[in-house]
Image 1 (cartoon, rainbow, N blue to C red):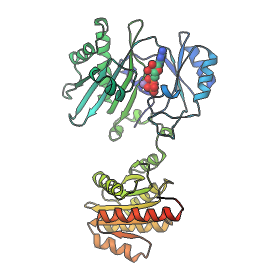
Image 2 (cartoon, protein in one colour):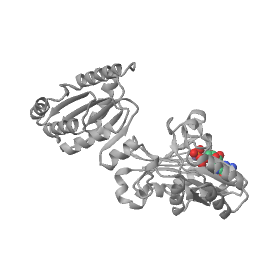
Image 3 (cartoon, protein in one colour):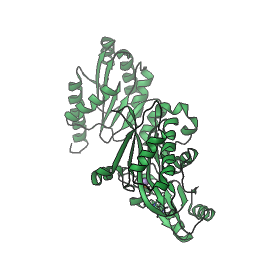
Image 4 (spheres, helix red, strand yellow):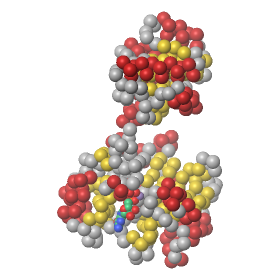
Length: 396
Ligand code: GDP
Ligand code: MN
């Protein structure tokens, strides 16, 4: 789960990291009012969306008059801001953050990620901040500092100081930088974040270290331990298809293609996506029904998949261990009947109670194509989808 910049900064503050003062606004009038509460003759109006690179898309504006604030706010609010991270559909700006302007002397990159190879949190830092980490690694690869944190002891003061020194910071800034690095690490660790990025972390004209932007992602599987973090969820920023499925306890990832996939297990799901691609099709999603799926759960999975208007054919691929093919088949039959499914449907069942499952499908007299192997299933669903496309007058 992602949260907004202002929420991330509020959390950072609790962990002792300096952030600029600011307030949230839902209208241009409120934005002007918020700015009056802050000190200084300049302020920054920032669109709150779950995406980086807002600056380049017009979502970050430094303003020096009420008029400019109101203009920036009216331009941003209600707009679908398109950054190169949002995809072409953009993300809706529903709220703004109005902050006191910061006098920037230097922009630093500071990120914390879970490194799957190291199985540890890795700190990534660069004195060439402001641009995205991908650009830093392309343009200034030598500026990147990496430091692995030992989970048994956490981020140690000497380790944080070492990173600060490697960043080439003035000795007078080392203590503050070290406090920032340890504070951010504690936040990541204690709140079960999977990623935390402060970009830019700035050195101000008056020699202070301030987090000017912050992105955090939380591990969904740990959210139950942090109800106050779950409260920060903003569904307007999420893929509506994923929200629908997630609310029903289904593991779903929305993709761009036309073939809906109902599968059990993440590994089989990945293999299924590969096979569809190899057969010349494009998957619309990745839906994992999990283990021991009841007919109701299968029906719900169909609803989640058909909720996506791009879906033109559906593939069910189950390798039943804990699952039971007869339950899956029952769910498939109910879905076709209750949802009046007209799209081509291919089902491949294998494993526990497979004979019973196939019998249920065969006796249903419904228009369901069956397959024995995954390769055959992928071929069949792609050719059924091609035929449907041709019938609809679209060239596949
Ligand atoms: P992002 O584009 O979504 O990553 O948004 P950021 O919050 O990182 O802002 C983008 C850029 O705007 C920063 O790298 C800064 O260069 C600039 N910026 C943001 N806040 C301020 C500010 O208070 N003063 C000044 N002068 N520039 C700012
Ligand atoms: Mn940024």
